[in-house]
Length: 209
Image (cartoon, rainbow, N blue to C red; front, side):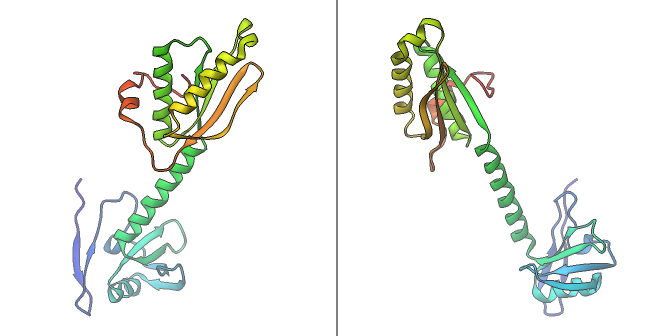
């Protein structure tokens, strides 16, 4: 269903639109409570008011009355420009999502003997993960006799870090843990996934490669 707007005029002649479209969020004339607890834009408590007094305060200020805590008794409403309110809410959600990504670590696995094509696929996978805002643990697994030639894995790791230096910053490593040479990579600020990484990403992308 398409949201509609209602227009009413304050005593001062200011036009205020009732903006709809956000599920579960009541604004202006959509608010049903007879009494509401009102806070201003700075979060200051203005006390409990009748709905009509709260709407008059919003009209006089040329802003909106937004129900932010519908389950409280009485419901809490905020005097705020609805467009600004939505912008701030979306900004907070974006920051929370960004933080969630930064705390989630992807893993990409290599072997000292990883073939060139597979190496490029994995490297581009790392670049894509970094471009999406994730941290990445690059790991080179050594088995059997490969442990006696750790310099081969070390050279591969050094090459990898050099080739992705425009996309990553090394948080720690490279270092050996048991039979694994690993480095923890974080996105470098101001960079995104490269076209090469996007074009080369595997059909089924997972947390581990």
